[in-house]
Length: 120
Image (cartoon, rainbow, N blue to C red):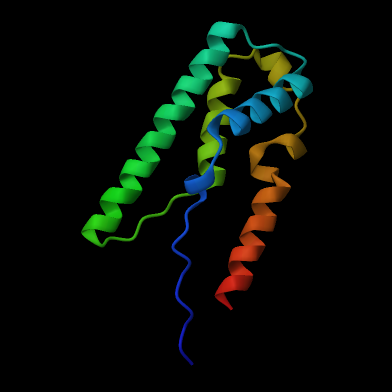
């Protein structure tokens, strides 16, 4: 039985950085009851933009050289989340339920199930 070709579409092709990071910050602020100062918020957006650019470059370089590359929306958002946590006092971070962490993002699992279904 022949395998179906892997989808060539990657998560960052239609990724709305501002909307995603705003939603992440809002969720973190709501759960921790800590409002990020504007300067820290700007740093989070700047860092996210830099990470996204590096992810895109690594993907393009790997495709050109014919090497496999792993890019993950979940890993990207987890890294940004952990970076935002560094700007929040520990006692406030402790207020955030584990179920609200990016690692428990229901949309990640939904996307993963859709990808798995498309491979079978």
